[in-house]
Every structure is written in structure tokens, then in C-alpha cells.
Image 1 (cartoon, rainbow, N blue to C red):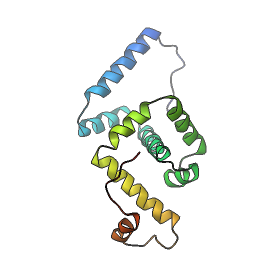
Image 2: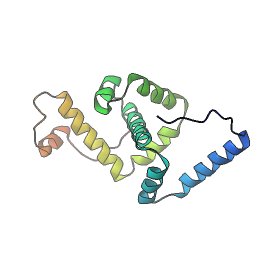
Image 3: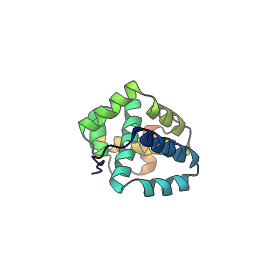
Amino acid sequence: MSRVSKKILNKQIEEQMFETLWEAISQVKDKGDVKLFLNDLLTPVERIMAAKRLAIAILLLRGKDYETIIDLLKVSNETISKVSLILKVNNGYRIAVNKLVRTEAGRQFWRDIESLLYRLGTPGKAFLPEEVIKRQLGHKKKTLV
């Protein structure tokens, strides 16, 4: 788990560091470059947790319940509660999700989740061919929210 040094950092230096981080993130536009940057910046565990928090936000915005999210993403009730609270008081997740829904990757993510949820929630359907599940779900052009 990541730990922050107990040594107090000068507030001005801390603010400059964050401004530099925000600027670096905003300047990296290519998906491949973003991947390289985040792989260097974050540990594997930090990357997994960031991806799970984004997935939680998407699922909450789609109206999925905590139990479904816990089963699907293997996260704790507390993690979902934290993301839910952030969704209620801030707009960062909403901005990202709204931009994501306009991409093919975002639409594909949701189709994959729907397919998995269909299999998990429908006994005996786990071994249906993918085409049958897509017909059952009526896969048309859909958005995340």
C-alpha cells in the first residue's frame, strides 16, 4: 500500500507539484502515451484501484446496486460508498464518464458488463453463445448513462 512521508511538505511546493501533475495529465492526449505515463506513475495496485473506482462510478451512474458491483468487481462496500459520496458532491467522475460514453471503448465496456451481468444473474445461461446473449440483451447502440 502507498504511504506518504510523515515529513511536512511546504504548502507552496505541494501546490506547484499538483499543478505540474494536472498539466502533465492534460498534455498527454494519445491513448498509448497515457498508458505509458500511468504505468510509470502508478504502481500496479494503484492502477487496479483507479480502474475499479472508475468502473464503480459507471455502474452506480447506470443504477446498479451495491451487491451487483461487489460481485462483479470484487470491491468492498466501503469502496463503493466512497465513490458514491464523491459522485454526490463532485463532478469529476461524471465529466470523465460523459466523455467516455462517446467513445467505442466506453460502449464496448458497457456491452461486456451487460453480458457478464446477464450470465451472473441468469442461472444456466453461463454457456450460451455470445451471439445468443447479444440477441437476448437486444444490443443496439447504447450509452453508459
